Length: 196
Image (cartoon, rainbow, N blue to C red; front, side, top):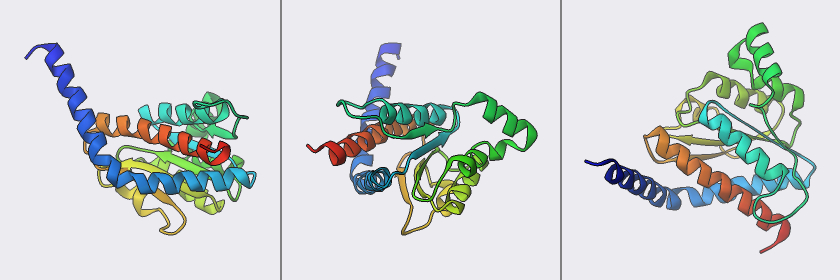
Protein backbone atom coordinates (compact mmCIF):
# COMPACT_ATOMS: atom_id res chain seq x y z
CA UNK A 1 0.00 0.00 0.00
CA UNK A 2 1.30 3.47 -0.80
CA UNK A 3 1.56 6.17 1.83
CA UNK A 4 -1.14 8.37 0.30
CA UNK A 5 -3.64 5.50 0.48
CA UNK A 6 -2.70 4.90 4.13
CA UNK A 7 -3.32 8.58 4.90
CA UNK A 8 -6.79 8.27 3.35
CA UNK A 9 -7.48 5.26 5.58
CA UNK A 10 -6.46 7.25 8.67
CA UNK A 11 -8.85 10.02 7.63
CA UNK A 12 -11.62 7.44 7.24
CA UNK A 13 -10.90 5.98 10.68
CA UNK A 14 -11.07 9.45 12.23
CA UNK A 15 -14.34 10.24 10.46
CA UNK A 16 -15.88 6.92 11.49
CA UNK A 17 -14.84 7.43 15.12
CA UNK A 18 -16.36 10.92 15.19
CA UNK A 19 -19.58 9.73 13.57
CA UNK A 20 -19.91 6.93 16.13
CA UNK A 21 -19.10 9.29 19.01
CA UNK A 22 -21.56 12.07 18.12
CA UNK A 23 -24.81 10.43 19.27
CA UNK A 24 -23.17 9.13 22.46
CA UNK A 25 -21.47 12.39 23.40
CA UNK A 26 -23.91 15.15 22.42
CA UNK A 27 -25.84 15.10 25.70
CA UNK A 28 -22.83 14.86 28.06
CA UNK A 29 -21.06 17.65 26.13
CA UNK A 30 -24.15 19.87 26.51
CA UNK A 31 -24.28 19.09 30.26
CA UNK A 32 -20.55 19.79 30.63
CA UNK A 33 -20.88 23.16 28.87
CA UNK A 34 -23.81 24.07 31.14
CA UNK A 35 -21.66 23.27 34.21
CA UNK A 36 -18.90 25.51 32.84
CA UNK A 37 -21.33 28.38 32.16
CA UNK A 38 -22.90 28.07 35.62
CA UNK A 39 -19.45 28.31 37.19
CA UNK A 40 -18.34 31.25 35.05
CA UNK A 41 -21.55 33.20 35.69
CA UNK A 42 -21.05 32.75 39.45
CA UNK A 43 -17.49 34.07 39.34
CA UNK A 44 -15.80 30.67 39.07
CA UNK A 45 -12.98 29.57 36.82
CA UNK A 46 -12.00 26.59 34.73
CA UNK A 47 -8.89 24.56 35.59
CA UNK A 48 -7.68 21.99 33.05
CA UNK A 49 -5.07 19.25 33.16
CA UNK A 50 -3.78 16.18 31.34
CA UNK A 51 -0.56 14.40 30.41
CA UNK A 52 1.27 14.39 27.08
CA UNK A 53 -1.11 15.16 24.23
CA UNK A 54 -3.85 15.72 26.79
CA UNK A 55 -1.67 18.38 28.43
CA UNK A 56 -1.60 20.15 25.08
CA UNK A 57 -5.38 19.80 24.90
CA UNK A 58 -5.71 21.38 28.36
CA UNK A 59 -3.63 24.34 27.17
CA UNK A 60 -5.66 24.56 23.95
CA UNK A 61 -8.90 24.73 25.95
CA UNK A 62 -7.58 27.37 28.36
CA UNK A 63 -6.31 29.53 25.51
CA UNK A 64 -9.67 29.41 23.70
CA UNK A 65 -11.41 30.57 26.89
CA UNK A 66 -8.93 33.24 27.98
CA UNK A 67 -8.51 34.73 24.51
CA UNK A 68 -11.45 33.89 22.23
CA UNK A 69 -12.94 31.02 20.30
CA UNK A 70 -14.67 32.09 17.08
CA UNK A 71 -16.23 35.33 18.27
CA UNK A 72 -14.85 38.32 20.11
CA UNK A 73 -15.80 38.45 23.77
CA UNK A 74 -14.16 39.31 27.06
CA UNK A 75 -11.69 36.71 28.25
CA UNK A 76 -12.95 33.96 30.54
CA UNK A 77 -10.96 32.76 33.57
CA UNK A 78 -9.24 29.49 32.71
CA UNK A 79 -5.90 28.01 33.75
CA UNK A 80 -4.06 25.04 32.26
CA UNK A 81 -2.32 23.35 35.19
CA UNK A 82 0.23 21.93 32.75
CA UNK A 83 2.07 25.15 31.92
CA UNK A 84 3.98 26.25 35.04
CA UNK A 85 7.21 24.29 34.72
CA UNK A 86 8.55 25.56 38.04
CA UNK A 87 5.45 24.42 39.94
CA UNK A 88 5.31 21.09 38.08
CA UNK A 89 8.96 20.23 38.63
CA UNK A 90 9.12 21.40 42.24
CA UNK A 91 6.01 19.41 43.18
CA UNK A 92 7.29 16.34 41.33
CA UNK A 93 10.71 16.69 42.98
CA UNK A 94 9.71 17.68 46.53
CA UNK A 95 6.46 15.72 46.82
CA UNK A 96 5.46 13.27 44.07
CA UNK A 97 4.56 13.37 40.39
CA UNK A 98 1.12 12.04 41.25
CA UNK A 99 0.44 15.36 43.03
CA UNK A 100 1.54 17.81 40.30
CA UNK A 101 -2.07 18.78 39.56
CA UNK A 102 -3.64 18.08 42.97
CA UNK A 103 -1.39 20.56 44.81
CA UNK A 104 -2.17 23.26 42.26
CA UNK A 105 -5.89 22.57 42.61
CA UNK A 106 -5.65 22.80 46.39
CA UNK A 107 -3.84 26.14 46.02
CA UNK A 108 -5.89 27.68 43.20
CA UNK A 109 -9.25 25.92 43.17
CA UNK A 110 -12.32 27.26 44.92
CA UNK A 111 -15.79 25.87 45.54
CA UNK A 112 -17.81 26.32 42.38
CA UNK A 113 -14.84 26.11 40.02
CA UNK A 114 -14.69 23.41 37.33
CA UNK A 115 -11.84 20.96 36.75
CA UNK A 116 -11.53 19.52 33.25
CA UNK A 117 -9.43 16.35 33.44
CA UNK A 118 -8.35 15.04 30.05
CA UNK A 119 -7.14 11.45 29.65
CA UNK A 120 -7.41 8.83 26.94
CA UNK A 121 -7.12 5.90 29.35
CA UNK A 122 -8.37 7.15 32.72
CA UNK A 123 -5.39 5.43 34.30
CA UNK A 124 -3.11 8.32 35.30
CA UNK A 125 -2.48 8.55 39.04
CA UNK A 126 -1.94 12.32 38.87
CA UNK A 127 -5.36 12.83 37.25
CA UNK A 128 -7.05 10.58 39.82
CA UNK A 129 -5.42 12.70 42.54
CA UNK A 130 -6.58 15.85 40.73
CA UNK A 131 -10.19 14.64 40.76
CA UNK A 132 -9.96 13.87 44.49
CA UNK A 133 -8.48 17.32 45.18
CA UNK A 134 -11.23 18.98 43.14
CA UNK A 135 -13.88 17.13 45.13
CA UNK A 136 -12.22 18.23 48.38
CA UNK A 137 -12.58 21.84 47.14
CA UNK A 138 -16.24 21.26 46.17
CA UNK A 139 -15.50 21.67 42.47
CA UNK A 140 -17.35 20.04 39.60
CA UNK A 141 -15.26 17.67 37.47
CA UNK A 142 -15.64 17.22 33.73
CA UNK A 143 -13.65 14.20 32.57
CA UNK A 144 -12.76 13.73 28.92
CA UNK A 145 -11.93 10.03 28.70
CA UNK A 146 -11.82 7.10 26.30
CA UNK A 147 -11.81 3.31 26.27
CA UNK A 148 -13.58 2.15 29.49
CA UNK A 149 -12.95 5.38 31.43
CA UNK A 150 -10.46 3.63 33.71
CA UNK A 151 -10.20 4.17 37.48
CA UNK A 152 -10.69 7.92 37.00
CA UNK A 153 -14.28 7.36 35.83
CA UNK A 154 -14.97 5.47 39.07
CA UNK A 155 -14.02 8.57 41.09
CA UNK A 156 -16.68 10.77 39.48
CA UNK A 157 -19.81 11.72 41.40
CA UNK A 158 -22.94 10.77 39.47
CA UNK A 159 -25.09 13.86 39.96
CA UNK A 160 -22.33 16.45 40.16
CA UNK A 161 -19.67 15.50 37.61
CA UNK A 162 -19.81 14.82 33.86
CA UNK A 163 -17.88 12.19 31.91
CA UNK A 164 -17.46 12.61 28.16
CA UNK A 165 -16.17 9.15 27.21
CA UNK A 166 -15.09 8.61 23.60
CA UNK A 167 -16.23 5.16 22.45
CA UNK A 168 -12.88 4.14 20.91
CA UNK A 169 -9.71 2.22 21.78
CA UNK A 170 -7.06 4.02 19.74
CA UNK A 171 -5.26 6.82 21.59
CA UNK A 172 -4.96 8.86 18.39
CA UNK A 173 -8.67 8.57 17.56
CA UNK A 174 -9.67 9.42 21.15
CA UNK A 175 -7.43 12.51 21.10
CA UNK A 176 -8.93 13.61 17.79
CA UNK A 177 -12.41 13.44 19.28
CA UNK A 178 -11.23 15.23 22.43
CA UNK A 179 -10.19 18.20 20.28
CA UNK A 180 -13.66 18.26 18.74
CA UNK A 181 -15.22 18.02 22.23
CA UNK A 182 -13.12 21.01 23.34
CA UNK A 183 -14.33 23.02 20.36
CA UNK A 184 -17.93 22.01 21.10
CA UNK A 185 -17.55 23.13 24.72
CA UNK A 186 -16.11 26.49 23.66
CA UNK A 187 -18.85 26.98 21.08
CA UNK A 188 -21.61 26.17 23.60
CA UNK A 189 -20.09 28.45 26.25
CA UNK A 190 -20.06 31.29 23.73
CA UNK A 191 -23.65 30.53 22.68
CA UNK A 192 -24.78 30.62 26.32
CA UNK A 193 -22.96 33.88 27.02
CA UNK A 194 -23.37 35.69 23.70
CA UNK A 195 -26.48 34.14 22.16
CA UNK A 196 -26.82 32.52 18.75
